[in-house]
Image 1 (cartoon, rainbow, N blue to C red):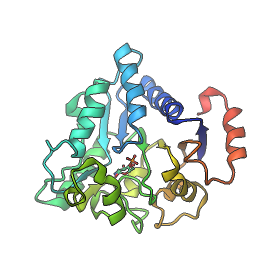
Image 2: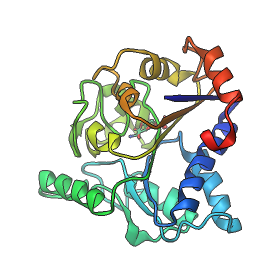
Image 3: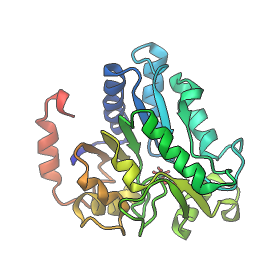
Length: 259
Ligand code: GLP
């Protein structure tokens, strides 16, 4: 894994946006894996600026969201369909017909999950997957104990994740209990992965993911098996890592084309 430690979240957003923009510039029809949550918002803002200034054109790119709540309407402001539309599709000038979110309202959930997997395959696969990380080490909504080779499916949210996400809802009771999420196996199929994390609340999860044993108890640790995963963390999120001198040395000496 490439570990990039940056002074603050703004610097992290610039690094992640540069990686993503480079993929889209090289391949305008690139398929982007899209994460929700607050972690990638700065990255999306950077990409939106590039779209507005004409530096990068996202109009031919496609997108696949990682996950969606079950049981809230798509037009609910906190449905991930609404969040992706608001924060990514519109701001980056993507074609809404090419941006996909799992259908959390499907009556046949397993069929909807299979269809989502088929759509990702039919697109040619994800070129670059953007990830945040939950305080419990989840990626997408793959909670601890998720199979490391799981595919898109329904999951029950842990009490901790529901509490963490309650800030987006009027009350804890309003946070859905279930979700659809790409599996860890689905995420691992992406050709390239960039995970962004900021703040001390993520420090333990980042350390477990990067330096801990690969374990279903820290789902993000599966990324240690990915051949091209970059982890962009600010100082606070890097606080529990032990090899920080090495990571800094590696990054500081890396030519621009390598990161
Ligand atoms: C959310 C999402 C994840 C996200 C994580 C962290 O619930 N399902 O994709 O990475 O939890 O969220 P945040 O970035 O807001 O801390």
